[in-house]
Image 1 (cartoon, rainbow, N blue to C red):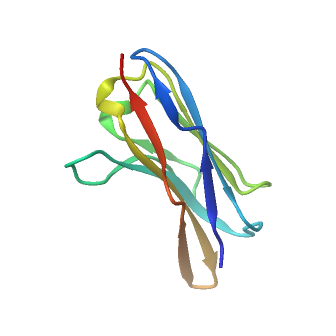
Image 2 (image 1 turned 30 degrees about the vertical axis):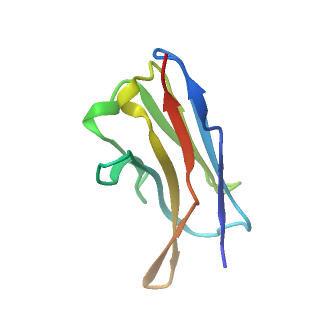
Length: 119
């Protein structure tokens, strides 16, 4: 069972920065994609950023220009660099990594890390 561990969350003031990391418990050989979701209180979970299997990245409109997703396939690690944070970015951020095994893709999830943006 692959487990993902997120780190880097915390409380920052508006305009501040944080970098989230997501590390699996074992190496994942064939990464098909990776990304980050977030869920704020009372809101639906939304995709924040992803790296697809072809290497293309995709961002939610609300974070474009402020968040950057990157991955290190050798270490099966995914990062989310966040700058110019706004109170609206307050949420639990969860990472995922997709592993391809033959014709099937398995998605692994982290437990989530809290990001709070408040003055």
